[in-house]
Amino acid sequence: MADIKYDIIEELGVLSENSRGWRKELNLISWNGAAPKYDIRDWAPEHEKMGKGTTLTKDEIIALKTLLADIN
Image 1 (cartoon, rainbow, N blue to C red):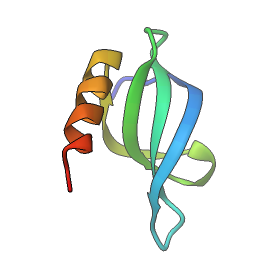
Image 2: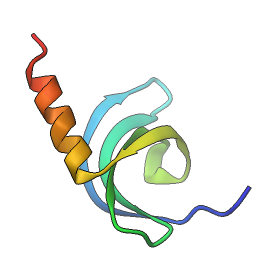
Image 3: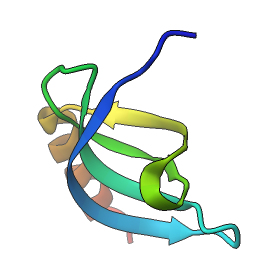
Image 4: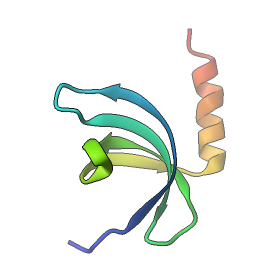
């Protein structure tokens, strides 16, 4: 598997934390030196390991915000 490089530009918030200390977080991350994207995924304490997640552009995060605003 190729080495994936990442730089957490901004930690925006924690959505949840499990009993082992892993947290589902929303962060702004640069992957492999590319432009930063919004990222939702599980992280081990100290960000030494990560789970699967999803990345969103600024336009996609704005669209998600609009959709979430309509949830009752």
